[in-house]
Image (tube, rainbow, N blue to C red; front, top):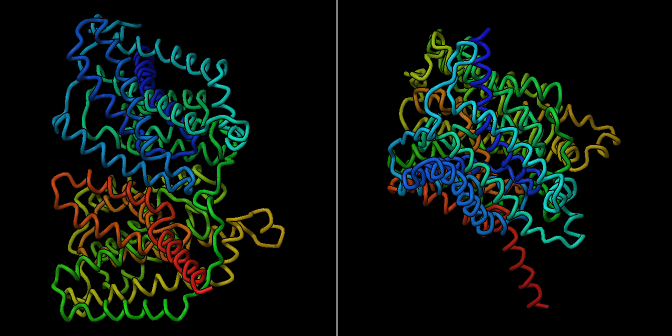
Length: 619
């Protein structure tokens, strides 16, 4: 019993930093509706800035003063990021701002590398709190006890700020109805900046507070991101008490999981999140989402129309050029184009359910990687011919999407996105830990195509035919009655239901179809590379597709394809530079600010303006 109590105390201590970071993210989302993936970067900066200040400021006062100064410094950095990057795009689709925060992640990663170096740094011990206290005979670090005591104080301070001050009244009002707050004369821009700075400061404080228990490294941003989002979603987006309860729950379960179920530690928190969201779709203390339309806000969307004669001619010429390319292009170009086509099909499948159905998925890689693994497992373990194994890829991905969609479709908005992420992490952990079947991180190798596809040129044509066919098929579905029913359910679910459309069923079928097409892309991928690894199932793979869709233009039918082509080409070219993350991050931020409708959407708007100007001139 004493050991269990000591483990429980360790979990409570771990919850301190996690709650600080999660509360900041919850505040930011509650007011600005920004899904801030750069929040982990502020946590990492807090650790590096904190450890630097602690080395300069000695003693008790220096240690605790360094933590407070870190919070102020990171809050200031957060305010600058909000004003320079996010403020110009608040009128863009809400989740389009997610792309900007991803660009911020890349920029901060490289800046941290240049300023603080690549070496991990061990955090200093808190003065006067070295050693342990024995509780019921079990050693408990003194600093853990201090963290346990500090956390409720921080919670009370945040509660008082939100419930008993004018700023808190404005924050709560903006959380409920930010349009009304603006109509009442409140300067929303500065309110958003203040809240973003406060949330960033809390993340920085969390990074500094955890230093005596760990240290600072360049992977902290991504390592904390998953747990923080899980805590915020379990607690309820925008709920500080919910974030506190969830932080304690996840931290305590994590400590006991390491002790008693070590193989479950990679996915335990995602399992808990999935269970909570299935039972309470808006988290423990959350409320039903009322934020925007997740990519459908802004200017009214123009009715979709099939391509005209000129557009069809341009597409035909492009396809003819791609077909003739092997006659004069070298092998490297063909391999790059295979990667582009695969990623374009993957992104188009996500764009189909995101742009047409309004279903934002953070776990779409489960179907891409799931299809790749399904084909590879048949070849590796059963020696199945490539043709049969390849057909199994979209089939397996479709069945997986059908099962996952049954749980996810009942949710909406960010909660839907996070539940897809939870299931994606479960699939990833299966591939990573079931070594007897998947070989874990060693991957499945020697998965090559059949003899008639052996060679770069034959496989290039195979990829071109299937990739283009898949993208064209999705376009035809969008123009079919099913596509219009899907759009109706996205734009006005109640009216769609009133007209006889079973919205949830249509969305479930769209989710499954998107999974099938992602699995087709995964099948092409695995035979082009000859191998597959768990990295194809990671969160970053899903985010790459999501970023491609938003960069291309979520309200355009070609957005996924164009965004995927742009992102793949940019990464291939920029990764040759030393600080490629910094350059790519700045490019992404620049595209988001200059072209808030995405590349295709902005070009379409520009073309419409030029045509209107020409018509006015002629008149």
